[in-house]
Image (cartoon, rainbow, N blue to C red; front, side, top):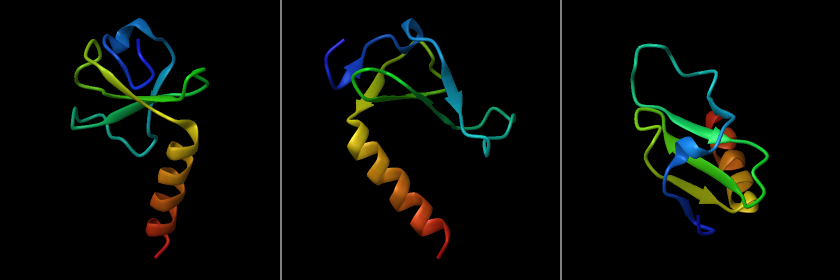
Length: 72
């Protein structure tokens, strides 16, 4: 693993989907909390595929922006 990606995201455990995600098999992202390098994000339909690892500060900014947009 380098600092920007994980080749096989299934090698990590503890993934979670948003509570807003349905169970209809649609597109969804999963995140892994408490990872030492940053916040890994993967496609839930491809669990053995790669994950992109975002720096924690960038992830917090992204989540804050999404929440701000949702309240408009």
